[in-house]
Image (cartoon, rainbow, N blue to C red):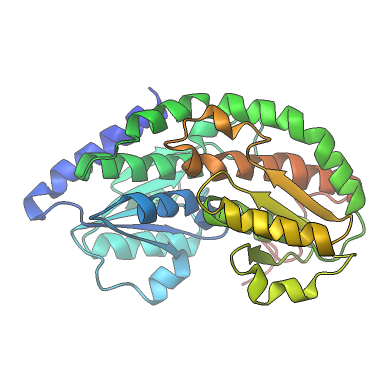
Length: 330
């Protein structure tokens, strides 16, 4: 069964179950760390396309400590954790206690899968054999699109579901294109203590994950994330000819903001300004009607599996090494 069909079956069942109490009126996306960033495409889509459904994304502990009052029997809570992070499981428990329908996205069965009403297994973005349409961000986006289609209609739905079918092929070809570029970038940045990552709109989630998960968590290199739309409201003042900047140029409505930042970086930055454009990676094989929503789906695995790995190899640092994670109490 295609993942799109699996998602549709689950969403349809939930809508049928909730019909007697007024249906699903709002959706919350709950996760922590990279899983939280992985829900960005779903939230971005809901913000731009849904007319009637309220949607909000939460990091797990924030949901636990400050649960929104609107969460209740008309809520769909989609919760993601690879192996059942404690605070994510607690967030799922609270959402369910409030009456929300719950979908757990998981790699390994855990307390999360025992709590949630429905569970969908995803494939880890970090494994080369994983299919792009089956990673957590793709499934989250598919849930958002399907929920919108079944509750209020979404005219791009057919194009979007077809796009998932070719996403993995686009990614594989992008890996071939980006690998020699990543090797050069890694060599230029092998001695850097700070690497800024920039993006906006549909690429913001990818920029965030690349910073906090790939560069900071895995390589222990300082990496602030800067939104291109906010760049000229403070962060551009730290730019000089030696600043390392990695900028994602999205194919979507915020592209002019990305291009404005690129123009400034080219004028005032140096050789360590690096630009990665979604169009270069082949995103235009996806129809214009839905292309914007697939930027993250393409960028994120390229950043993790090509750029982060190449930097890891170049600086001779095992990206599975941690200082504190899984080692100390926190």
